Image 1 (tube, rainbow, N blue to C red):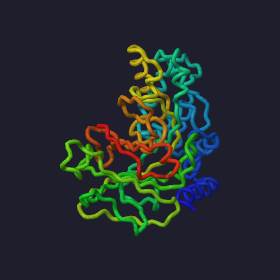
Image 2: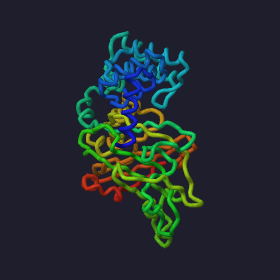
Image 3: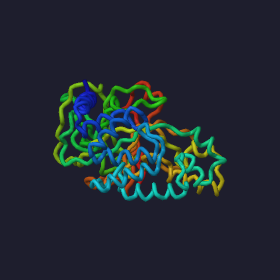
Length: 365
């Protein structure tokens, strides 16, 4: 049994005994697109569990966790959460969520709102709606929770901290022998099922050469910078591992746990997919507005697997599959340049064959 399965089993047992935190954990374990989550969240909120109250605010305003869109109800839950001392949800202050919900309610005149339809209407892109919706892809959003110390179960998904590897596996290094920095671990066996993505019972460990993110210094005689030195290790999710100590002189980033949620994504403005929309100069600006108001959890830090990456670059060909988008993080002052993002891309053939070591890293500051 994986640590995630153990966590869910423990949460279920506690939930059935009436523990509010367990009710919340068990409810959210179903994923934010499952109606099975809502009854447990409501029970946890009724017992006064703050995170459940704020999550229900998000559920009723966005239509997640099996809730229908009911903005007045969502507002009431956000206000209850604030009164209970909660300060944030989905990486953003609750006051911002409350303000946004009240604005949406005012626009709707108190009538139920379809968040996606409203986003298209606000951006004045109703004529392009069907073409854009056809390009929507599901993704896994990894929601971070800062930790004071790396005391997660072995193999758990996280940013930073120490990597959990089999004792016999050698720490990744550059060609010159300098140890790379561990930046993230993903236990893909714990993520919700994503349409078009095979079931992946693997654990991925991501390493970078932070000193040379814009290009490797392993080829000093080259006129051009080589791709950034990095490594992606993979192993079966249930394999025995040990928490490894970083080699002397190697940076260890402060840890944050990662919990998976499903989230829909639309293409970046300059991506190949968006270029097929036939956007004009005017509708290009409106599409920017649509992406900013897309009704998902895409606020705060955005760590993502699969779906569309949040990177703006001209692309003449379809993008590979997004294996991981790793955002900058305020926790531990983890900054990729000027609050940039790291992206690991993998081809469909390599994903199918589990050739994760061939994933390509790009850096966007």
